[in-house]
Length: 102
Image (cartoon, rainbow, N blue to C red; front, side, top):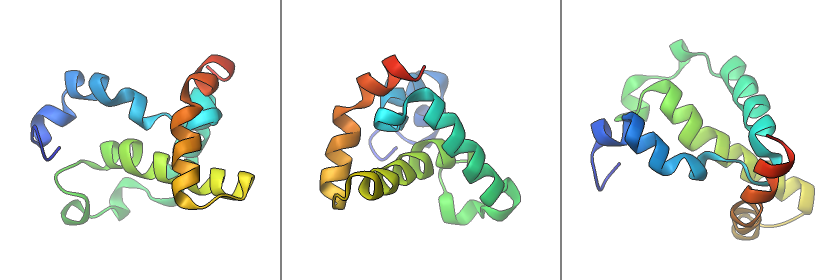
């Protein structure tokens, strides 16, 4: 978003270019949906203040920030890792998660 601006980042092309970054590691696409639904229940659109998440809208914020961060926290708990190790685990296991949990 900083490099290309919010409008480009939120466009379909921008989302396609960064789609892989939103995948929650070994939880796969199924895990993405479960985490997204839980977060949407916890943080309905009306509770996310536009000024706090600007320049993103609430759906992009949820998909690009909250889902990956939640996945990292879950991996930290699952594997008893610190944040850095869990981030690496998430990055390293994206292909596995996509293949096993499409």
